[in-house]
Image (spheres, helix red, strand yellow):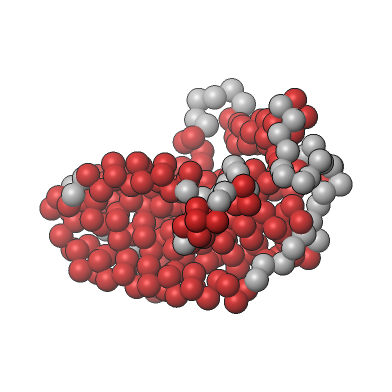
Length: 261
């Protein structure tokens, strides 16, 4: 499978570039919107929430802390959701391409992951620039984001591929994922600190695998704190299981997909 993907690396790169260009096709400012949109979002979170609405974290009076807290959890979460949701629909959305062209079908999830990574890199780069201007640029713990994001995306790809194949045969899967992700968002401490919940709720929310990721991102960007790597061993097991299951479903049903598209 890896050999096939490598041979089609030019195709994958061109599809990622095409998706990015298509998003701003016909607009006067073109790809400049890829900077303006996330910049506006970061401005709202850091300035409007922190300075105008005076949102504060418990025990922290710094006016920019809540905005950074929010961005630290929300940006990686958005990449996770984009990978999972687009992965669930990618085989259906690219049905015509699958029927007309011969290429490794596994390249479609790779294109989804690469596109999500490009979008994340733009907006996260802008966040780091804003933090640099505010004098809040994190130190060495920032490097810990790389393995964490890689692990997070392993889980998203594994689940996304498995659900993506199933969605070809049962179209309700794609609709159900959208609803489940809404509940999953509010069950993850992205816009609220875990400490404001009662002990019983904290226990339940900690069972959510995304809670540890979000807590680690917020710890790195807000408190310059390195993650507790041993606590991510269960996530590594989960990521391997998700990838193995997604691969098994893909290999079992990929040959029949075009008949249902």
